Length: 315
Ligand SMILES: [Fe+2]
Image (cartoon, rainbow, N blue to C red; front, side, top):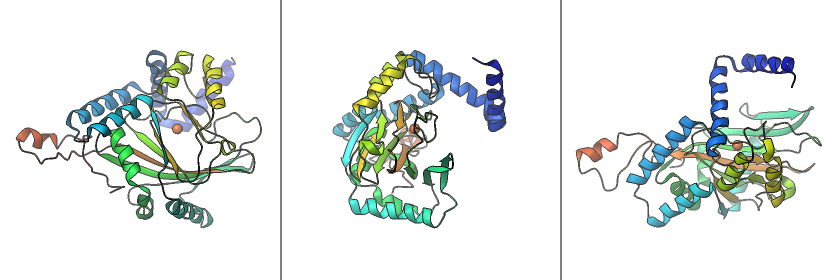
């Protein structure tokens, strides 16, 4: 280890992240400790918040027994394949919207290049964006059901993102577009749905996800962060060899990015991978069915992050 290099790295880290640096360092430390102790590379505060919200939602949830059991399976495994649940005309509509944003050089398009070659281009739509009316059409009943099950009730969409990955230079192993194993580090009651906008074969990179069991095994073997795989390297390589998630345009899956290790697959030269990602968390507002019949039930409605169908982006 070169202390000079480490010191320079730390200084540049502080210069880059400014006042946020101490918090980022604490968060990083917290995640490493949690990975070691619990096999979950997510912060303790995020985990506690996730547990409380989950327990609260399960107490008051009015979803069916089948949906509740499905939610338990999704949360236990961390991932569930949904299949081709988005019609191809909807996929094409969203793909043409994305291509249009690139052609017209929308200022919200983010691009990443390596050695002068574009390897990533993407855009995120949030509340207030005019494109949301089009994006919301992608929320088929199957996707709504999957989010409802995972959230144990109502959910709230945080964003819709579309991006395209290109191949990386031969032998390039640095993190560019989440191509190293990681967890997102945010709240553990958050779920993501990915929808392929192209036909994705393993040669297109697919998406590589370790389920909850495999994530715990990787942490047990020494995984600590995207930079520190420890002795989990060969275990993670075996997951990669077993195959990435692939499917035709419209293929979808739901997973928990904060409890499951995952990484972006890298397309082979001349191939690309275009995906749509929807992020959702349990709904902020409670809507009890039947309506409040007592003061306590009325009071419960004021507690944030409970069940209900307050879904400003997908309603
Ligand atoms: Fe991620």
